[in-house]
Image 1 (cartoon, rainbow, N blue to C red):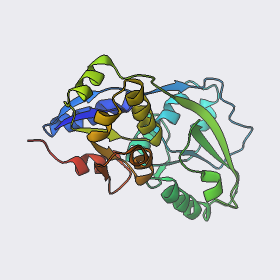
Image 2 (image 1 turned 45 degrees about the horizontal axis):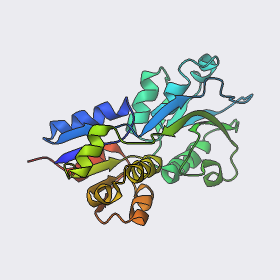
Image 3 (image 1 turned 90 degrees about the horizontal axis):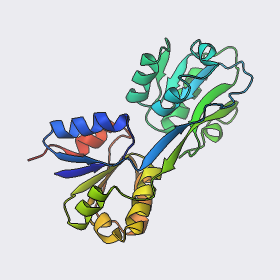
Length: 239
């Protein structure tokens, strides 16, 4: 199939390679740009653990002046990719905590039973979040530190716009609700909403698929689990 990957680098590199390895023709257009908030306020602490739901958060604190203190904390990470990124960043104690906020909250509740200190959790987060972790962990103090933001592109690259207009894209992968919305906004800006909706949309979760369905997309497929491996398995192999 002819597929479009819209997630930003460096994550897109792995996705594109995995799809190409299965025989697909893959184009890439980053519809989000990740910006680090260099002076992010982390709070005074002490904290019992770090919570991260994206590798972008780990990249965002790579040069933070309090990085050494963060490295001494255990990490609870959403998904295998974020877990691997935490270990690669030098965090010695990393636990994989499910694939979404609900599963993360369950894992944190189980973890908290063995946490005698009861200090707050430090959540390294993006500016736009799909779930309310603090609400999901009622009774446990969570300090949310916004360390990065994802800025939406305002238009498709010319080659992608031309491919959509010519019907040369069969499917689009959507890894976040915000990138799905960026895809729709770019399609409207280029007067290409109809062909942009006509392709098959492969979504990491039902929540991500919602804005596409609302806009009129008819061919929507959702991964069995909210992770990259499941999304690629959903697409299958090429011809």
